[in-house]
Image (cartoon, rainbow, N blue to C red):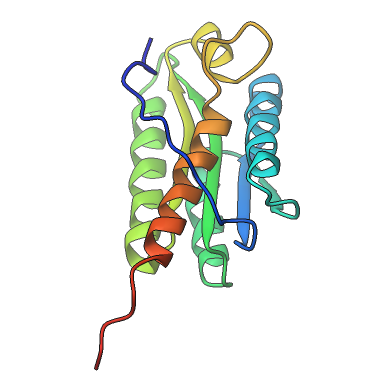
Length: 161
């Protein structure tokens, strides 16, 4: 299981953060699980009014994240799923989405939680979607990572000029 070795993160004092969740629409059952896990995590953290934005697919996640990062969000969570097929499409989409989301985070300084599943088959995706019987809840994990990073960055004071 890929979740082995994950840190136990304790996040406090984050109820005032503006957080956006961006979710792709492909693979509805998997995406429903990821979104539910993300919203549950936000509620547990006391962030009761997150923005939820839906985009057509995972490839559209980076541009949506870039726009939201420029609109004052403290953290963004990107949720999607790409399932390997018989063509190179999988590699191109996964690479583009991953690089795009990393670039948004680096360029803007806004943490982007990576909740994009890149799986060989539907069974692997369902096992990570946070559904009943799933071994992992990647939507929940992506929120905790993004919000934890936002809290950490907020604690760093501005340098003197």
